[in-house]
Image 1: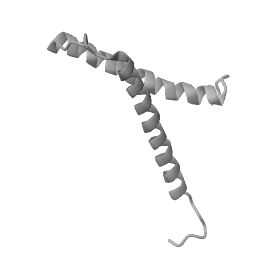
Image 2: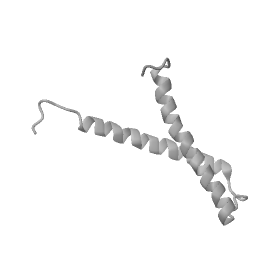
Image 3: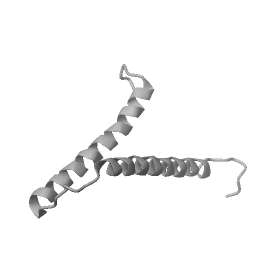
Image 4: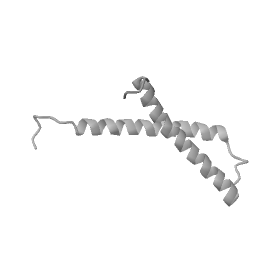
Length: 83
C-alpha cells in the first residue's frame, strides 16, 4: 500500500485483472476449439451472447458479494457470544 496510487484504483485494478484474464482464457479456448475441432461460429448471435454474458457477470458478482458479506458477518468476533 506504499504505491502512489489511490486505494480505489488498486481495488478496481485488481478486480478488472481477474475479468480481463478470464476473458483472455475464454478467447484462447474458443480459438483452440475453432482450430483443433473445426467449430464454426458463423451462425452465432453475438449480441445475444454479449447480453447473456453481461447478465451472468452481474448475477454471479452479486451472489459473490452477498456470500462474502454473510461470511464476514458470521465470522465476526463477538465477546458476548457463547463458545
